[in-house]
Length: 459
Ligand code: SAH
Picture 1 (cartoon, rainbow, N blue to C red):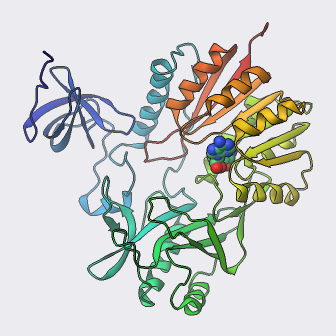
Picture 2: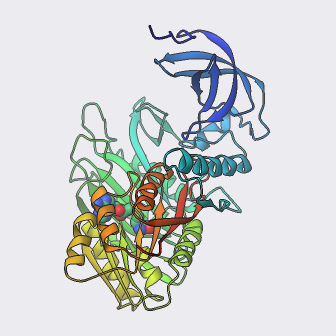
Picture 3: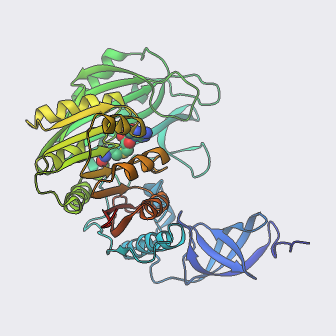
């Protein structure tokens, strides 16, 4: 018979912690049985309450710390609301960078069985707060009042707040003003359970280089009450506003954005620069949220691509063409592919905006479009991939190994799928030369990596 877990639900117990999960939970062991506790750190001892007991691991709640890690930062209870959505709020920045570096190294070894690849020291931020150029704030109702802020972890309860430690001041300010105006005009907040009300989310984006501000109202209905007054008040109170957009999402879903976009006032896009390249960004397109670190990330991607000016480059998962355009000046030709049509419209517009003519963009799934290009004789010398969290599609990896680009630059926001895909590519004749972690998301458990693969001789 299998051994029973050595702990019981609701039991109080002293635990020593020696590791962190990728979510940033402390890992403690009771007779070898792991218990995950949010807020606990390695090298700490704590009294915990067991809250969940599974067969091979459990969860606990921190009750009292008995000893503290050198990386611990104690935030007063009253300040905690500023850290909504920040899993690593209890860690010093040095501790956070250490944690991310270790996680990348461990996952490459454990998941990818890649013990030889060099993991370069993570590039952190000089000022790791107030970096996000975007907010996406859920709206609801509490005690008859419109509230907006962030979801209490693992619930759908909204904690009302006007300041987030990781958002740019301009973004915090805009969210605050939008909330005030919506309260003044009694715009009905969305009710998730009954699928009634109007305002579901407030989204704000800010171009840090241009000072242009976009506000997006994500609504359940086509109509917004007092629309004219709303526009009037916002344009008056937000001097940086250049684009006011409505996005309609009629579905009962957790997905934030809907299909329909209505320009309420001003431009449909805002502009921003990364390095020398100017970008138009529309409400529905993906754009990196940390502009300072994005420049560093793309510079690394450019460096790892080792372009001489003679190469054909394919940029898979290209979004609004950010990496494509960043590389275009140093390549013969760049092809970009992306699944969101609006993003490709932006990418084409962005190429024109910058007078870049050696790029071509296509809408579609990378795993379908790239084989079609290959049939037409378009072969990449250098391939860049920047997939979502789930990593590259298997079919795309197969195509890559038949196309055999000399170099691959893999940009990843999820080290676990990066490790898996690198293992596949290494198995198919590539050498993973280096992985560069970049901290794009201080105070959260996320880490971005850019890595280089080179086709081995004789392949
Ligand atoms: N390289 C861009 C975007 C990276 S985010 C940048 O740095 O800004 C990943 C992008 O992949 C998103 O824009 C998403 O819409 C797109 N995407 C997701 N699945 C895809 C697929 N199967 N084929 C092509 N693009 C896809």
